[in-house]
Image (cartoon, rainbow, N blue to C red; front, side, top):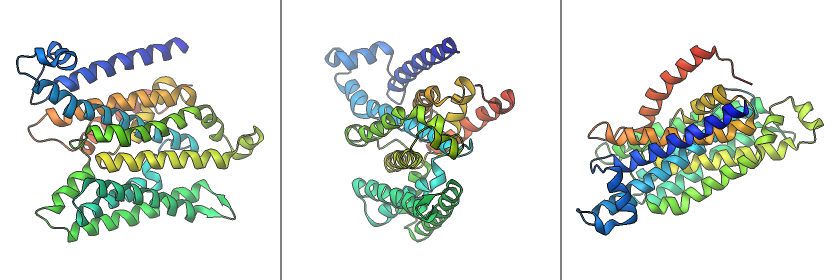
Length: 334
């Protein structure tokens, strides 16, 4: 099993490097790997001057970094929530965070035009959605998992309805297209500012989850068994909920709503490396980063107009997931 896992991580690392090189080379401004190397290390030697380096550093490099980190964050969020709820059908959408953040972004586009205000409202309403779901599920100082799931469904429905209302009253020529494009997900607006501000926060949250990965195996047991092993369930659950909420809210604020990643990528990883979270968490991180870089590259290169990310994640992820499900019979390796 250890050699199998080592082979998996070596393979995903090689594929990620190849996908990154392809992402930096491909686009309307096509480069060869040699020109890419020159654009990075010796931009003045290029025949086209410094324009190649500008395309790499100002446009494609930030986009690849943002895609990789957001993909890793959404995937690990789904893996953590599936472990905490002991339910393979759970993803970060279960707490209504995506719907809340999506409503915040739609409201920001409707009321303002500044990107920072749009992102700020997305984060605020994402956190608000999680807070409301957590409050509704709390009784006598205890949070019941089933009630938290139901409360998340309620808040998700409310914010989805409010988002529909914003779309209904928005200007159909200016605001509505922007709202719809945002809600379907896109990394077209990714900049170095996102790399320097948003991405470090997501990486800190991923690092917190990484540190707790062995404890996720225990909290997936029955509550009495976990408590008997000396695990503070309340503290672990709060950390997992907060970190996954922050990751999802920041992802939506940066790239819009990207569906399916938090659900299918942990399934892929679990079917390959097993259900042990000590291995599953890093596997989800690596697969999520690889998946998003590949999908985003396809989104901007397949057609003249950019394809929304949620469309591609669903069209690509669902058939692959169906194939794996049929091949394994839904049985995860140990």
